[in-house]
Length: 240
Image (cartoon, rainbow, N blue to C red):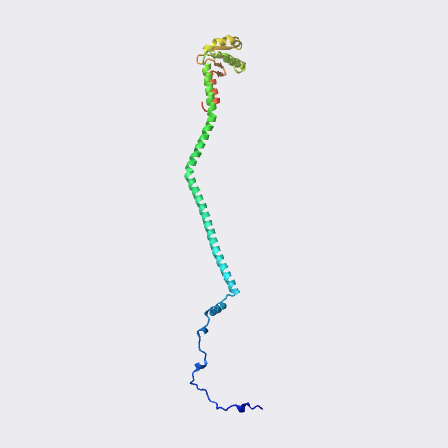
């Protein structure tokens, strides 16, 4: 058995004095022992790092916001374009209607002028040939009325044709000619007229170159005046 406890001096146990200062056993506070602020900041930042879900939510919200803004901008532009095109079409239509209304009197006047011009052309188509025929007949009448030119050959031919139509006449037939044509007709056709029983007479009311046959059935007017009137009537119906 050990003899150590026997060698220790015996001291009585007593309570510690509660009035003794506590600070004598606490180490002194030093400035170097102050807390590091940067470490605290780093600690706070580490604790606030966003998670993957937070990033996903943020990206989704950002994409939705951009889509809304893009859709609004596109819709606004489309609405503007549609409104512009509609307004432009309405403006063009209104302008065209106004122009047509303003030009309508001019158009109607032009149509009336075209109609009148066409009517004038249609009238000329029927008038010009008649006028030309009348001019030609007037010139022929003027020429035939000149004794040196009118040699009576046309009259002799006309009388011969009338003689060939003898069955048309019965009874006492009389042939009247202008006094200036009497001698020539008597010279060339006297025997033929006597053979058929025709009597040759002078009639100052006839124009030179014309003749008239009178019979019991009626008269056959072959005078120049009558033939002239008939030609004019055929050339220009309704004019005479």
